[in-house]
Length: 547
Image (cartoon, rainbow, N blue to C red; front, side, top):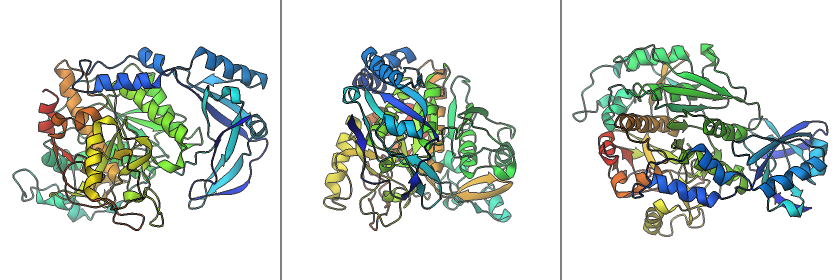
C-alpha cells in the first residue's frame, strides 16, 4: 500500500471529536484518471476563443466523454481490486470517470489503511466523517485520482446575505420617478438597487426574450428555497411592465425540494430568482434545488454538473452564489470539480459564480495570515463575479478576489495578471500566489439590492447579488444570438478578456477588499482582483458579440 493523500491537520475551524462508528455506512466516490483532460482543455479553448475558426462550435456530450472517460486498463484494474474486496461500484458520471461505493467505516479503514474520525465544525457544531490520510495499492496510483470524502473539509457552504427590512415609505420611494443623476439612472439607485437601476446602469433591455430554448439555470443549495409568492410581490413592485405571475421551473436532485411555506423561504434563493426573472426579461428560468442526500456539500456541486451534462436541453447559463474556501478542498478534489466545469463549458454552458463576500480573507476572520482564495470562483473555466456599489461605481469592500493557490494563470489573463502584480510592487508580498489564476473576472452592482422575503421588502448585499445579475445579462445576449441563428456564448472568459470583449466593460479604478488584517488589494486601471475587467454595458456587449 502507498499513501495516496494526506494532510497534517483538519481544515481551519474543524476539530477531531472521536473515532467514527465502525458500523456507520460511508458513501465514497472514486475519481479515475481521465484519458485526455489536456485534450479537452485545448478543445474548450478552440470553441471559446473568438479568434479561433471553431469559435461557437460547442462539443457534443459524446465528444466530451471521449476526453474524460478512464482508460479500459484503469477501469479494469480498479474494478478487480474492488471485487477482490467484495465491493460493488456504480458509475455516477456520464463518462464513467467517477465511481461510487457504500461500505461501513470498519471496511473503509481496512481498505484504505485509514483512520476515519468524526470532525466537528466549531462555529456551527456540524459534524463530518473524514480521515487525514489514506493509502491504496501502489499499482493503482496511476489509475485513481482520489477518494472522496476523505481529506476535504467542506464547511457549511454559502454565506446567506443578511436581510435588512425597508420601511414602507422607503420601499415606495424607489418605485417613484426619482430625479435622475444622469439621463438614465435615478438618484434612488445610490441607496437601493432594483431591476430598473440595473437596466439603467448597464443598458439592459426591458423587451422580453423570444427564444424558449435559451434557458437560465439558478443553483440552490443548503435548503435555500425560492418562494413564488415573494416573487409575485417583487414583480408587482419592481417590474410592473411584465406579468406578476411570471415564474420559474423547478428541477430537483439529491433529494432537493422547494418548500413553499413562506416563512421558510431562503433569502439567497429569493434573491437569485428575483434578479434573474426580474432582469432577464422573458428568459425561461429553472431553479435547480440540490438536496443534501450526500451529506457533503461538494457532492451536490458535482451532481448538478453531472445532471446537466446528461441533459439535451441544458441551460445556456448557470449561476451559483455558493462556494468554499479553496483550502477546504484538496488539490485533486478541486481539480476534479474544475474539470467538471470544463466539460459543461465545452458543451456551451456559461458558468457564473459569485466571488465571495470576505474580501481577501475568504470566509475566514481577520486572523488569517495569508490571503484565502475561493472555489469554485477561481477555477479558470468559470466566470467569477465581483461587486461594486454606488452610481459612481466603486469596488465593494467585501468583494472577494485574489489569486488561486491551486490553478495556474490561464493564458487569457496572463498579461493582465502580470500587469497588476507589477503595478502593486511589494504590497502584500508573501500573502498571495503571484503565479495563480486571478479572480474575479468582472463585476456588477452588489450592494443594497431590494428583494421580497417572507412578505416583506428589504435589502441585501453580496456578490451573490452580482452573479445572478450578470447571468441575466449573458442570458439576454444569448437570446438575441439564438434569434439571429448564432450559437450561445458558452465559456465566456476568452471573449471577455479579448480586446473586443473588454471594450464593453467600464473599468473600475477605486475600492479595496480588506481582510487578514490588511487593506487587501486595490482597484486600479485595467483588470484588478476586486472588480476584474469592470462592469458591463449591454449595448456594447451586443456589438462585441456581433449583433
